[in-house]
Structures are given as structure tokens and as C-alpha cells.
Image 1 (cartoon, rainbow over the protein chains, first blue to last red):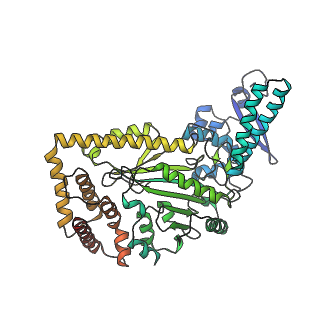
Image 2: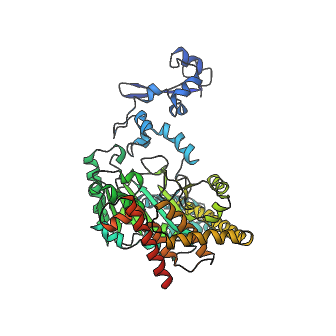
Image 3: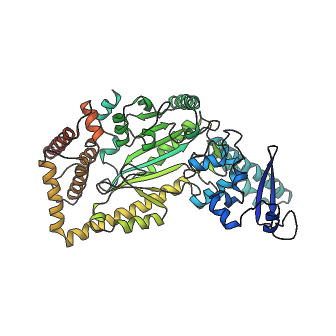
Length: 162
Length: 353
């Protein structure tokens, strides 16, 4: 991604600006970032202060202004206590939490159990997708393939009705 | 009242009838769950905790799994009673310090329990005797399904179950085994092994979990990663590594018996002698001696004692257990006296039986 100001150099600094509660994202090269005085210090020093936040490329002072719309906490508060405020914080602070989760777990995606309702949705989606595929294949008169897909759908539906 | 009743019986998982029970004391699985619309307990006001507790307890009553249970409000307990539940592995260190609106629901066999408003809204736990992680998972999975029918869990398709601490996000699951590894300790190989274990993504802790020191050669080993692998993958991984640790412990026991038989005989014989003849005994000494005696019994170097008796003793001798049983707080000297007496009685009963 190129710098949004000069449009020449690679953007290596990514900011979030909050104006009248609106979050605006900025992607700048180092030179323009310094000119706009987003960076008062050379980067290595900022990283010493920032702890987690600089991983997301967001200056700490800006980060602390964002608050979770549900519980009202800032990331600064969460970081200090080491405890997340509510389920909505995950979405609000995902830019900080994703690198943190990756560092702790080495993964960023859950592959285990899900509440039943969601599981059904997934299955329904899968069936839906297969049905569309089936239609296409029937149009092409590839009946052997179509039979396989039909069996798959039947199996999924059977599982769902269990 | 309830605790006095509990002190009179022991948890089912202490019976020592599971696979590998002489080395794998217990297998435990816990799930962290939260309610979608409510602030997590570390940040929640009392009124929120109250609403959460009401919702959760209502859901609990609707399931078939919590029929014969004790409901215990932590805020109403004395420090001694809190220690008792901690020693019994029913609550965590953090929960034991909790105040109002924090509940423990425990089924009377103590296989299944639930902490309400710990760090997360729900902490469900199952404990089985021996190496039975899969069984512990199967049960807790069903309980979780049943609760979910009446609770709207905080869940995201990307991150899984959302928890107050990022170290639990994903499956929210911790699968652990309590291991008795005296031969690895005696031979000095334990640190090497614990290091190996940590490379494989497991953590080793003391008898009472987080932040506790290992006592009497007992170690609790559990998964560190909760996001990424699925629950059955985590269970299999922990189980596989535990099995390997058990094999190593057995191998070293054989080596010790071959090369240092007299020393081992002496070590376990002394433990046996003190346990059956002492008149005063502090907890730490008792733990260590019982650990050595357990080794001696397993190697057929000492008279036969049921694993269940040795398991139970490890809990009955703890300070809070002794005092709850007596129904009052006691000075350390009295506790030491009662402890020594209790050990002698239980062992003698077992020899006769």
C-alpha cells in the first residue's frame, strides 16, 4: 500500500484518527507521518512505550481514545488489567487482539466446537452451496458427478435432522 | 453444614479406579463460557453479576446433569470453608477470594461442577479418576450443549468462545492431568522432562493449579493453547503426552529398582515407618511421605494399600479438611496431632481390610 499523502513511498505507518467519534484510518510513509507530526519520536522509542499497541501500528495516545460501545472500556484499561471487558470488545479492539492471540496461541482462527445454532447455519450454508452446484452440473448433463453431490446433500440433511 | 457433609465423603474421582490411576491421579477438563450481552466478571458491577447468576442458575436447573447438587454462595463462606473447596479442587485460587454473586454448583459425586462468575461467567469442570481425558471431555461437551440451549453464549465464528482472558479464547478449554512422578523427581530427570513438555505446548503446575508449587512429586499438566486446534485434538495431544510421561516414569522406576534397590527400599520404608508411627505431622511432610509411600506400594515394596485410601489421604490431611471435619478452627499443633492420628487410622484400617 502506498502512502496516502505523497502517494510515492510504501505506507509503513497505519493510524486511526478519531474526529467527532468517527474513526478514520490513515496509511502513511515514515517521512509524511513525521511531517504530519504523528511521530514525535523515531519509531524504536515509540515501541518501547507502546507495548502491544504499536504492533497494530496505532499510536498509544490515539488507541486510548477508542472505547468499546458496549462496556465503555478503552484498550488501555483492558491492557492494564489484562482482562477483556465484554464480547463486543473483541470486535472493537480486534486490531490489537488479533496479534495478541496469534502470539499466545500461534493461531487466529477457531476450529473447534460452536454453539448448535451456528453449526446448523454452517451446515445449511454448505447444503445451499451444494444445491447450487448441483443445478449447474445437471445443466451440463454430468449425471455421475450430480449423483455424488446429491448423496452428499442427503447425508448432510440426514445429519441435520438427527 | 453442606461442607461438613462433603468432608464426610470423598470425591468420586479419588476412588482410583481409572486407567493408570497409580500414576495419573485424575483427568480434568474445564470450559470457560460467557454470556453474550453481559460485561465479563472482572469488570462487572454487582447488579450485572446478579443477573448473570440468575440466568445461569436457571439454565442449570433445566438440564438433566445438575440434579443432585449443592449450591454454594462463595460470599457467605468463611476463609476456612473457602480453603476447603480449594483443597478439594472445586474452586480456583481467584474464585476463593470472591465476594457476592459468585456461586459454586457441584454435583454430589463431585465429577461435575460449575463456578458462576469466576473470571468468566461460567467455568464448567469435570474430573475423572486416572487417565480419562476423553471421558471427561465427552461429559463436559454434553453438559455444555445442554446449558447452551438456555444460554446465549459469547461466540464468534473466527475466535470461538470469547473469554475475559485472551489465554482462554477459542475453545475455552483446559484439559489437565494430575500426575505422581516420584521416580522422575528422585532421578533428577523431572526438570528436563518439564522443559520437553513445555516445548510440546503443555504447562506443568503444582497440585492446586495456577501459581502453586509442586508438592510431594505431584504435577498438574495441561494444554496452553486454546485457539486453533479443536477440542478433540487438544484432548488427544494432552493424552498422548501424558501417556508418554507415564511410560517414562515406569521405565525409571524399573531402572531405580534394578540399580538402587536398597536405597529405594530404605526411602519408602522410612516413609512408611514415620507415617505409621509419628504422633505429630505437618501437611508438607505428610504430602512428601505419602508420595514416597505411594511409590513403595506401587512397586510392591510395602504392604498393599488401596489406591483410593492413598488418594483420599492426600486430601483429608490438608488443614482445611481437618478443621472442617472437626467443625472448628484449630491451632497448628492440634492439627498436626489430628493429622498424624488420621493417617495411622486410615492406613491401619486398610491393612486389616
